[in-house]
Image (tube, rainbow, N blue to C red; front, side, top):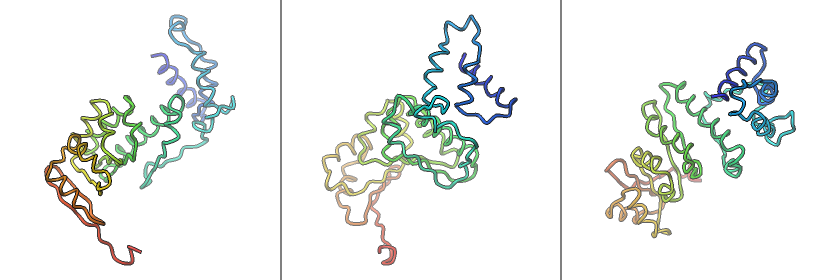
Length: 239
């Protein structure tokens, strides 16, 4: 793969010159990189250079701030890391693949380096993330392996119908590995009960339990066992 070869050559270059890797230095390196004649017809160097312009400060690119840091920021050992990806989804054709690759790389590094420490990946309303074929498959794979590395994945959603719109492999991975289901009061959206039954395998008896929820109560199903729980706090904490 020509692009892989270029990237390897680039890192050899920055190591020899003791440069800090950035999109700006990669852009400059790519401009002076000579493609072998036998591969020139199969690799669009000019097209790649034009595509990268928007990520450089050299060309005043609109996303030049993304990949041109002057030093590394190590957040692997931070207890809580949150990514707000709403604006990323709106730019699916531009920064979406890069940002998601960074997020997934960080998650994988955190899992591999923080051995013996419980870890939780929480995806809150991340439907676009899961419905994307490539990114969703990464999460599906993570779903199957994270428990072996002291971790778990939590999906938070307003309803469960989004699972049906996921590609088959992703949907199966979510359902097969989601042993714990926590449901809040559904009294105002009882039309969703049929979705809970068909998608999450909630039985008729369990639907009745869900209908019985009062203030501060929530329904939990762990494997085949289920029950209603109440969250009571002290007057001080309640205030």
